[in-house]
Image 1 (cartoon, rainbow, N blue to C red):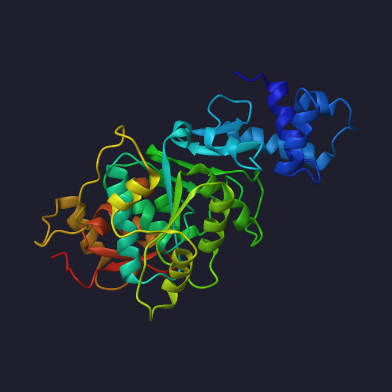
Image 2 (image 1 turned 90 degrees about the vertical axis):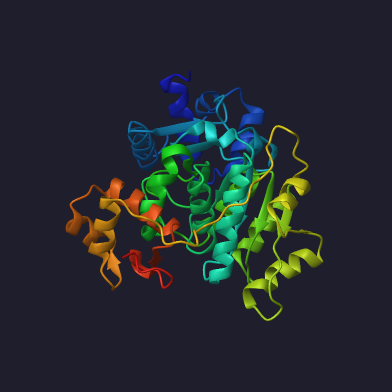
Length: 358
């Protein structure tokens, strides 16, 4: 157990100007501890001290954990990368970070087929014992998280913001579900806003935590390709699912395959590529929706009735139904997995074109 002074020293050094992960690693090589390093420095600025207090206050929240490289629960996989984060802010189950993981990433503006592939692949891999790691973005990322949740598997969402912020906001309900068995994780301290330049930093953690990275759909210039490149530099496996030669979001995947990424068609291909041993069971087929119209219980039918036949926001549904946000989030996800509704832009929901839900 780390004492308060030691933890505060880790947080203080991490917040000092010009002290990124590589600089922090150099400090650890030359000093016994961050506390020893601070003894050689001037007193930290008031802004740094306030920031550290905010970090510590955040950690007092329910299911909130601050993990430094000195903690036993720090993910072993990250110690192998060139620039491991000195500390992590974790909401949910910190033990999930040390489970065998595969990253599933891809385009935000994904096709319906791509979203289905991400969902089904994640579900099958999670059934096989792997934790699914992604970036909580719309499109492929969100559907990968949902696929793991659909089979009661673990999933980890790596964020590019401070732990008290969520981007995009429309995935709040998904984030709430993820941390119930898996985890939300970020290296960025409290108060960090959404900044374009932070997403590559996030991506190196997605690939670094994972045994391999699977790209489902990606354009010729895509953040998912950046994650794949990070995986290569970290000596991790890179995998890609091919698509139509006419599809713009398949070009990135085809480029990866041409340059040596493993071509993936089934979940079995992923297990084979990762050379997993017998501790991980074989994946099973997962059917996202049944052919017959599912039977709804009374509460599910209430949600469908409240939804009506137009796109409705989450907040409106909360008011119409009188349910808690957590309960409604769980029900919406279940109804989505049944094929009865779909999330749309702006955090709204509408009935699926394939079902009427009664």
